Amino acid sequence: MKTIGVLTSGGDAPGMNAAIRAVVRTAIFKGMKVYGIRRGYNGLINGDIREMDLKSVGEILHRGGTILNTARSEIFKTEEGLKKAVTVINVFGIEGLVVIGGDGSFRGARDLSALGVPTVGIPGTIDNDIPCTDYTIGFDTAVNTVLDAINKIRDTVSSHERTNIIEVMGRRHGDIAIYTGLAGGAEGILIPEMPLDIDNLCRRIIEGRNRGKSSSIIILAEGAGKALELEKIIEQKTGMETRATVLGYIQRGGSPTAADIILASRMGYHAVELLEKNIGNRVVCIRDNKITDCDINEALSMESRFDKELFELAQILSI
Ligand code: F6P
Image: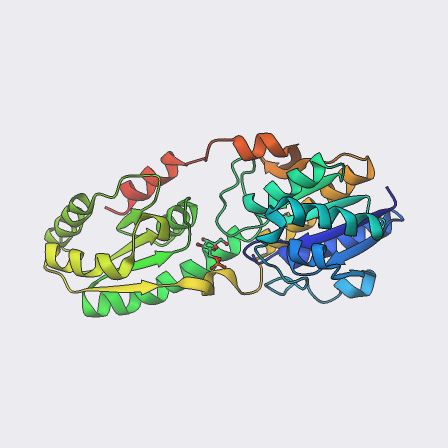
């Protein structure tokens, strides 16, 4: 393979730039030409494509977001859109593609591979919801951002002797809530993987108060409920003043942590190594701290991973 392309797609995640840098610099190191495709699959369809050189990825390692921009492309999901994309790929002489994104982006990568364009996915999403990999790029940064917020909220919550319910991202997956709940000593963690049991949560808050706990922090994954709705219910059931905080998009921004930069760099390198060998339809993953890869179809059909042990540990320790 002499010419490859790289794009970012779906929700952005800190560390995506480090992955782009790794793809571009590894490809050039291996004597390949590399094109940057802007605005995800939309850019592919519209030919929003430029050749990248070593300098084009300079000074981006520490920056959140993605220099290639990103989008959730609806047109690419149609047969017409997919065909257009393949035409543009052929016009530019692109022989293989690296797609940095989440599961929606990998479905597109699978479709391109099926049409004869070897495509490799790199998991970049703060949600850590790609079951074939232990970690996705951006997750560690998001966890640290949320932890910082929890620690700040803890100050005011304990001063006022209140309960604060903090809503974090995670539509179908509760990893952000579990990891930050454990690291932030949250008194309760509500995730989409477990049935929402408000009475049990309120009982824990009341029991804690009876033991002398004057304030509580509850972490709620957005897929499990709405903090602004639960605020009133918890206040009414526990009799404790309750406030809600929705952290929102702050979780997707900021400088990536060293862990995310290193993960992205290792994954970017591995993706190019695969394409160099003409191998496509793969997702790069990290398992037991080793970089490896798996079939995209397999990755997309795997059952969602839920770390019940970690979840229970958080509950035990926050008593
Ligand atoms: O990146 C994943 C994620 O942050 C989800 O947790 C969230 O629900 C979603 O993206 C929202 O993204 P957008 O509003 O950009 O579509």
